[in-house]
Length: 292
Image (cartoon, rainbow, N blue to C red; front, side, top):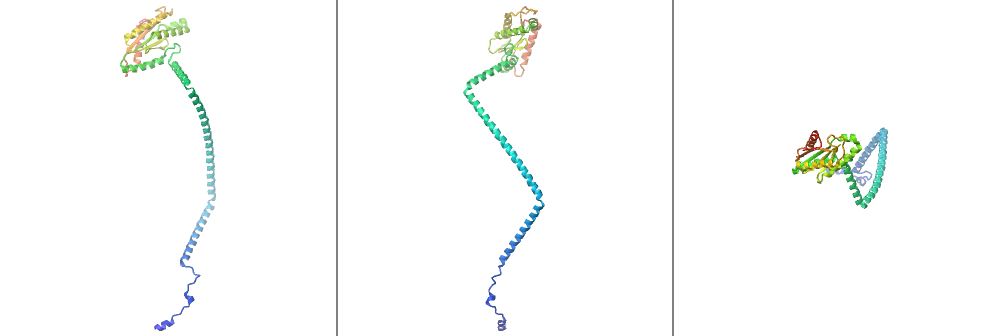
């Protein structure tokens, strides 16, 4: 059996035993097949994209056109903004140069300008707080000083006294002698009252019309009465004729006096109202007198 089997097995030639060089290795074939498959997928994707672009080309073109228009508008806006900014920078530069010139001038003449400015401020304050006719403090200054002294003396618990003076029958004086002489009369009375009050802290002001107010800080009623007598005598010494006065051939005044120690919880109008009441009493009692 073994001899028969050995003899029946076919004998292969040398050429049959060598591999065929024209046959590719299996792994390279697989790789090539994969690359071909990938290329086919890409071709399919490109065909789909081309089809989509072809179908939606008008929409894409319109969108690109709109985007281009917006871009052009933005460019135009930017150019306008740049032009405006350039103009502003130019204006600022020019103003900066002007300011530098002004600053140099102020630096060179600073002392003179300071003096002139202070003089203008003083003059403006004087006009704001002075009576135009009589040139003494006006009602505004009187009220400001009253409030100031009220607060200060309330803290110090010291007295404050007010006098209200009224020219007797001044309307009849104006009607008789005319408004020009009436103005002269007011100026003379204001000057006499102003000169009769000597202490630096005392203030004489034109309260309104033919009325004058006097503030006397740190003064009690008895001291104020002496000042009032001095004021009344100063007007009598003027000897201004008043033919239509039923009480004297010359101009006279009536005076009301009110004195108190101010309190922060009260208004300064309480003192003003009391002085006005006293002046009213002086008129009711016949004028040309003092009521305190």
